[in-house]
Image: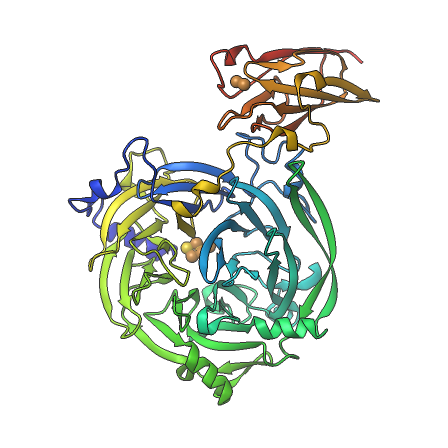
Length: 628
Ligand code: CUK
Ligand code: CUA
């Protein structure tokens, strides 16, 4: 792919501005006015999620999920450290690719946002009332959680497929192809989501033959109850050098009947497997995270339970696998294919009924390609990756190699329009484009290569997103905006659906943190052996207590800082000189804790880091550390 890309970038007409005449008016959001949409964008290798306003492209927030964030103490404060614990220890970084907003009846309901960690397999949940990560669940038996999170129509499940087949239960194995075929497995995890609280738990895993699961989508409407994954390396090679892995002319779409799988689980047909994984949750009353270790998972074997998994052949190395808003069409995107196959759900079901199978693959029935095929989009472009929909019968596919978005009609499979992207688009996103009712209006390209789009900033440039209008016959480029990390997938929701539920501050009277100081009178310093608890408060414009003595080198000092403010957007910060960690950023009504173990005697100033009032600079104090 790398060499194809290099050629491509040279061929593009560089720095060409294709933006139309009214682009400025269509993206201008006047000072003090709100954007129409929230755009949640994955951070890729920065492990975070960023939030932009659309159509302006203004950055509104960065939400740390899988990476520590010194700016607000995420992963540094005692309250948030447990969020990043795993069965392999504290993992303070990840690679975050896909996002899924919770759904009710196939539409975004504005409650939660789910995010995947690709490297150490995890799924996180962000609460859209606070824009905070409130839960992270580790996935057992997964060799990389790229194919995730995908969501069913009523958020029954968040689904995660393994990117790398691995010997399950962390077994060791030789790495030759024969060992791969014998020992390596892929898993599809079905994470149940509690309707009221959003809490996640791994309901069951389907153990599949070793192959690499890629992008996926849940069925909707008529296809509700089914789930579709793309896969590559169905050759089951342990090395993906091209001689090995792209030999076959077709890989598969893996169709899972999760309703049926659910029935088997209820009927006691699942097997218990011993394992170990972490489930980390933020307690809503104390705002403190805790980890729970889970040691068992239920698994289903599709070789035994013959009617839960079927395979549909799909041309060369499918990446995206998308289901249209009607739930009838399933679109596969073979990265190395010169066409886009569109499968029909009805035909697929009929093929199962008629037993139109071309054979079996590791004991799983393979449906005949033609039997499930609605048709092919011929010569759409080069390197199709992902497809989104506008709800008016049109599909929009991103093409990495030919660097463009192509609009085509689902019904007659005709290409209708194409626009270049600058450069080499990965994912694209139509707001609501993965739901039953897309909002349409825009498509955003998340591009892989930036080159000359912005002022040069050395060898590394910000990734670039591009906003296009899709409400006319022709797509029109409206705006470029730089993004953070490496965005892959994104989601967008009308601001109306969530803006009024936003929490402005926490009620200090409901603060159940065990070390909270509900008022200045409650502040104190408590010593228990060499552990010292400082109960501190912050309010404009002082920290209480502000002078602390009686601390010795080697003491474990915990600063429990309660922000007494009861007003919107008045956090206080807390940092202490020479502490080898980050700051705290404490929200109004909340308590956060910074641990400090002084290694040298001296006087250590501490202060508020967030400019909070005219006397912000005076919000400070001293810690005296005596020799041991
Ligand atoms: S992947 Cu990035 S362009 Cu991780 Cu969704 Cu397709
Ligand atoms: Cu509190 Cu600055």
